[in-house]
Image 1 (cartoon, rainbow, N blue to C red):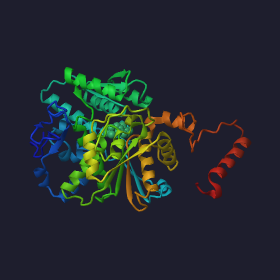
Image 2 (image 1 turned 90 degrees about the horizontal axis):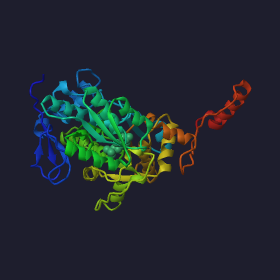
Image 3 (image 1 turned 180 degrees about the vertical axis):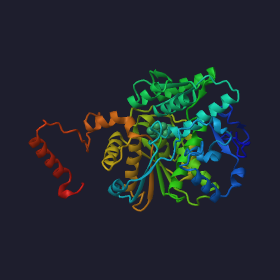
Image 4 (image 1 turned 90 degrees about the vertical axis):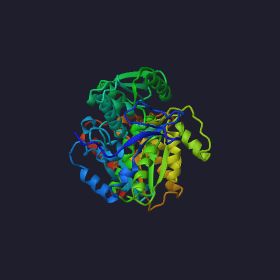
Length: 453
Ligand SMILES: *Cc1c(COP(=O)(O)O)cnc(C)c1O
């Protein structure tokens, strides 16, 4: 057992700093109905110098001392300091690779383009970063004698996969509410395989959200959606980790896809800490990218965030961000204001082509990452992002979770999209001469003068 930790954190109302709750209390919203945020005892964090934190984080990275080898728990003091290490539920998430997209960047006219591969994670999306914190806190609460019958979430797919895996690892019952027929097969099979109670409801994400809020309120089921700000604490490590991967140099831009808007808020919150603790001195800019079919933040940005109107999100290939009434809207606006933010959008054709183009350079993108890539391209074309700027696109999930989308793209069966870069298999009889002729035809077509086009 650890000695009693020095570092402390608590829930606090966004609007009233005197309204506070312990992180082991079952509470999701403030008395005024707004969200809570996790606030850390900054006095205590400041007792360690910026260089001291850097050394500590670097020492822990890629080592195996439980639980500090996790990219999230390696920053435990900044994330959720009061959990007993024995109650941490971790798959050693984080430490995902930061890929220099040299060839793709050159083709977009950005020399210093990087993709943070958050999908290279236990359940294939960045949702693991937040879920490890939430499920660990549930395990801690149960150890402290709290009655928690189960943990539940509404999900567009990836949240339920993460919840199901972490809850299964901890032996805690998990319940997921999914919009029937609106998520990918891979996303559905993960909670099924992990033994969660899977409810496929005849509604959309926002409808599932209404149900989960009711079972949380009326039945004491613990709510695992990102309105529970514990998740934000884990997710906020992504920006810190990226800056650490650049030896504490700050990139010029972060581009991140947004649906419920927890992740963009989390990204900013992590960078806030680096600034407050004097570990960096420059601010990056943040771009939040939305699908045009689900763009309430984009519409609000068009009006300087003066008004916000929830919309009915239309179907999009980027199904994890098909959200019309984002719960973290207010936090996201604050975040974008602090980081000179931009909101951009991408149509279905734009996101599909961005994925396909980037895949041609060795990536394997999910459609949400496609939204961010398409936004990056537009900003580069407009000259907002300049040639020499260092740009980091946050890839939120692994492309393998969304193969149905890629199969349809390459077999040219997507509705209303005429693919520009389809690459269907070439079907031939198994005869050397036939194969040989076609092979050379293809090589010459694709690599004229022996060079990639
Ligand atoms: C959840 C999710 C998002 C959106 O994150 P928000 O916090 O809801 O804005 C983007 N991409 C993928 C793959 C996701 O699973």
